[in-house]
Length: 94
Image (cartoon, rainbow, N blue to C red; front, side, top):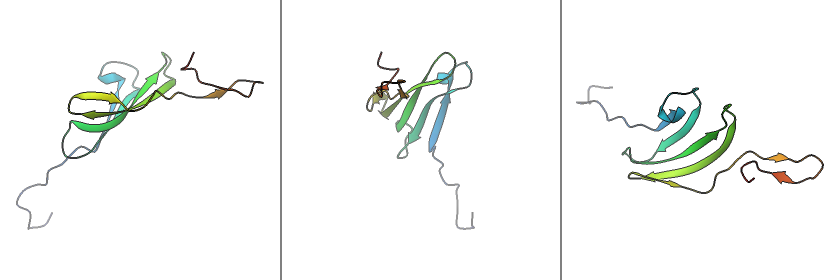
């Protein structure tokens, strides 16, 4: 800072990472938030869904405007190929 500053600049959060849905758990990332603008009520993010063993089960993009979280698309999960069939299989669509 130079001598031209009379007060400190305002700092804004750019992103936040939430672990264990904000509670007690194994320390896995359960949500990321990327803020836009200068308020803490407008952001986009991703929910991470995991198995009880911590394996990533699926991702869900979302956005928040005000206090309402709205899903932005569908849950995306890992894909694997079934042996010998050539078909894609998503464990989220059972």
